[in-house]
Length: 472
Image 1 (tube, rainbow, N blue to C red):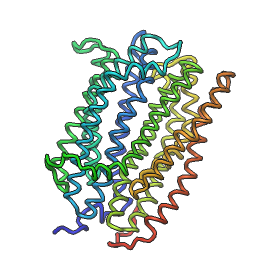
Image 2 (cartoon, one colour; image 1 turned 60 degrees about the vertical axis):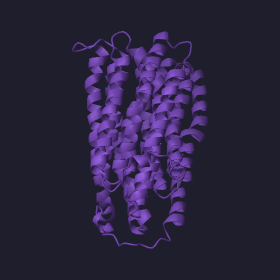
Image 3 (cartoon, rainbow, N blue to C red; image 1 turned 45 degrees about the vertical axis):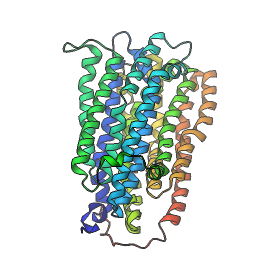
Image 4 (cartoon, rainbow, N blue to C red; image 1 turned 45 degrees about the horizontal axis):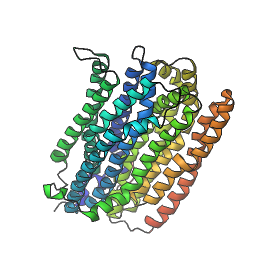
């Protein structure tokens, strides 16, 4: 029988383990953000219709984020549960958990298809104003309908990716993500502009390229899971829904879904609020958000390493490794976010040019880049804390952080500052400061919750295995 010490999750120094697991996850997430930026750049540079297309992507983005929220949230719950099962050497339950996660992916796909058929147009119209062009609305409906009806790629990859990460095979999830992103970026100009004999499809081409890339990532992710995740038992019988396992997945995963969904709802709400100030304000925020994703996805990638590392140690009852996971997870997240802040501050004008923005839209975009980026450090801390909470069965604490930063604190300030900006166009910059207020305030609450959950879930543990000394 193999001993636990043969598993790198149990014996590799935590700082090194976080770097080894986190680096490919960060690259994977950053690449996902990069091809969102590339999508937007190609679409916004379309002749004559680029501005309408850029606004169309802004309108569809919250719904795309919501689909990702369900996939990632389910994957996070499954990831933590599988990691704990493996920490307890229960490969049977780990296999059943994986099987049930794939069953849930099928349920999500059916729901997304129904939304694509019946819900897309009402959703798009709810964010429009009298200034929104008919062309923008039709582009939005076409793009989002394709993404919904072909969403099986994104939901399957969400599960396969988290399964690979749960056992420390994050390199393979990154390979799958890179392959899909490269396919997407190659197909984008071909399908959007009509190159190499392909008809010129415009935003429909961008949507088609996106879903093809997602399908490629899903196919590779599933292949790698069956080839590399030998610690997890696989059986068709495990696809049969087990209500107890599903409940356990969503005890951890539901707060993660809500956390991700709140990002979608926040962006959706902001689209409705900002369009009342002006369409350029709405478009500027939509394009800015793609850059913010690039930075915050680094924190999400590292969080996806923090969660299984701490969850495995929690399952094994190893207090010292939990402590190191918390300490170095927060440290590395802070370093990444400071680097992201400097990048955003220095490159605002370059990104405005990349998206072919000018006039009022460009000014608003650059203002958002300079002001909202000051919140990145606190946002990264909040994201890392959520991963720590989830690993320690702190779903409620994770939910509290999400509600504070993306609903409870930010919206009152957004509404207040938007009212001021509508009355005085010279104060539109105030709207962007609401993000800094929300993230800073939430980080203070988050550190208090960390102290409490650590005291309740970790402080009284007895180490089952003495780890090697922490090495940076």
